[in-house]
Length: 336
Image (cartoon, rainbow, N blue to C red; front, side, top):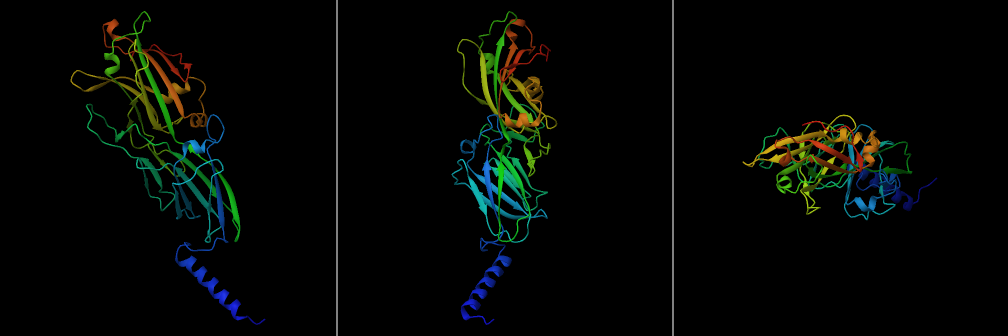
């Protein structure tokens, strides 16, 4: 069959396009080859409904080939991230199978490392090293403005040439908001009114949960101290402290996060007066015994009542009652 000049010209153009795909890392490839449509949701919460539009402000998508090498890094900071948000990735010419990793809300308080290779890729919380009035072995402090973060992944397999695969990515929230309310009672159960209690009390979370790989597995290496932010005085008639601490993922086992209460001393230093494993306390409610239940619940209210030292005449800090999300913890009364 004799080729007409028009057909010959079209073949030359197509060959040039394909050559550009090979030498320009698929930047200018036609979209009629392998493509994937990623449909994003955030239903991994206690309500089991899509809350994507309430939480997501930026999305970073990483596409790795079967050798674990980065092929694409796509950033969308425009959205809109409303229900039904999707992202199409075109011109996947090299292979039929890929690993896609999505990270939500990567801003200045997060940093990436080793992203060129999937096995080396990590995301870490940026820690500060401010001057403090007490010694610590921690690698750094995390301020109260930590951004909420999300993780999702999907394996895209068996995409044939000139085909489009549609995949669902249900993001998981990796940050937890811990609200701690502290009050004091004397040995008769009467609330203390001495405001020096709240003025001289500091609350922190300490944990090794600030770094994860791209499979969302915690590395449990750097010890971080998460600082608290005051939420204001609740009751003007008694000494009471309410703070918010945002921390990274909580684990049923491993990478323990500790709730630490410190008292400011006359010379300005801080003395640790109480500490307890946060997840250990949460598990004692009987409501959060699995990793999935911890992951779905992103807000924890911790209500602690201490023995008022001004009435006991000593420096004992004893937690007389603790509530977690309204659930009373029973095994208390141990002197710290």
